[in-house]
Length: 470
Image 1 (tube, rainbow, N blue to C red):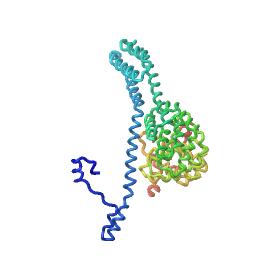
Image 2 (image 1 turned 30 degrees about the horizontal axis):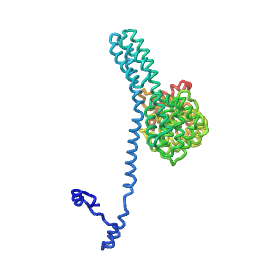
Image 3 (image 1 turned 30 degrees about the vertical axis):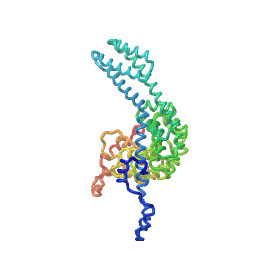
């Protein structure tokens, strides 16, 4: 080894070099105890150093690579969206501006549209001609030319955006590596979030069946979690939900939730997807095919998940999914009664005390309102003191937020239905007794909150109205 080094390097290396310790060095030790200790020390190591710390480093590096590649993959799409917003803002400000100051705005708008068209090579000859006309025209003529140019630009933007998104969707079917697939899924999820146009283009490109097929094929839990999150993002329209139900999406959710060995992260993504496809705010989405076939499995899995989870977000997702199921599928109510779903959910909510989210309480009130429509459920709900919880919901201070109004409305509906039960009706009757006989007894028992006007004003105001009014 030393013969291969130059003379100067040899001198330096010889001074710094520590000769290797022979593997049988412990045999030369006189003390037998020390010899045994040295022999065993060769094979001892901390397990955390070999696994946990290394895994953390690998995962962190992987996430960083995925984020970087996702940003690179969607650069063109993000550029189209960002540039389009600037052009739309300028066009809107042009229409609302003083005609005397309109020329600088026209020049800026035409310049932006021209740059966009050149970047995406869309019918340059025709559009450049319109751009030139808009720059030289005056007054109303300029506005008419701008209107025509803007219409041409909208077509060009839609064409360019569709082309790039289809390229991303195609990458899902033929990824070059697992890292490439992760990056593409992450990128599509990020650009589709709160962007209805991107979601529509993705749906038309059949992204939903592609993601579902990948969910069935992929073995890694983290990959399936990414796919389920992407599905939750794009399944926010009726057309996407129709594709979801056509390709056995409900079955995939049911199977994922039923396997309790799967990580909680993956199951929570499945719950979020179920809550999304059954959401009442999705237009023309009154039923989902396959939901009734897997209703029993879904209710059982969701009930167990809601009872055991320590995560507030997962509890909210479970409550939302159960509330949506009880609204969309009447058979689900029977299974919820059998599994004591409301009881387990209420206990987990109560364990959180004042920290429970108002959105969680809203979903709980919705579930109670739907369950209380069943005669069998009313008895069960009364035994678990659901009326007391609903009265507490009504007692909450209102700040005019929509969610607070929905909470009160659902609570009123549930109480109205539960008052058919004697135990629940007693609480409403108590107020009438106090109006006649006074509240001295209640004051002595420190139970005045049961009859305070603020508590039941909403109930009294709405109890005589039809449920459709509420």
